[in-house]
Length: 133
Image 1 (cartoon, rainbow, N blue to C red):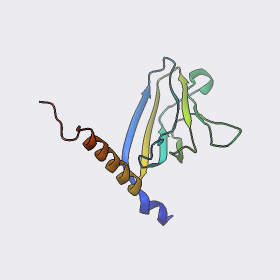
Image 2 (image 1 turned 120 degrees about the vertical axis):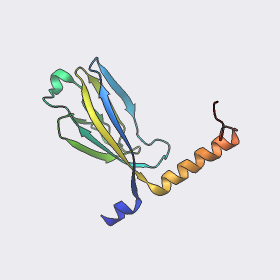
Image 3 (image 1 turned 30 degrees about the vertical axis):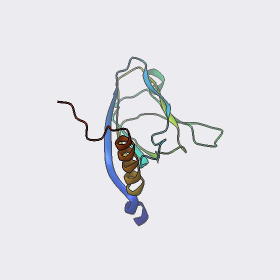
Image 4 (image 1 turned 180 degrees about the horizontal axis):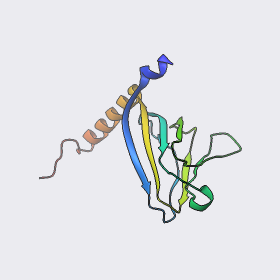
């Protein structure tokens, strides 16, 4: 377990609120470009959630598996999964307000390399250091 904390640095959190009008989120991977995100942790805040009525299920498509995992966004549930291509996922349409807090744990070395790639790219295109007055 000590190895986990040698590479993990918590750097980013997000609070999500789906408005309940059929809103969802398309199938994606949290870290498709090696930006450093290693673990995705989602904590659900939805009291009295009824997945049949409210929808909003998180569907995970585990890489190389013939099945999906449907996770109900129930109150006080914590979900942790790898942020890379191993776990493409989507949020199915929600028909009630749906709340979640997501925290990403980063690989410090991969994050530093991603920042360097971004700096190099913006420097080569002349965007670094530009500001609006």
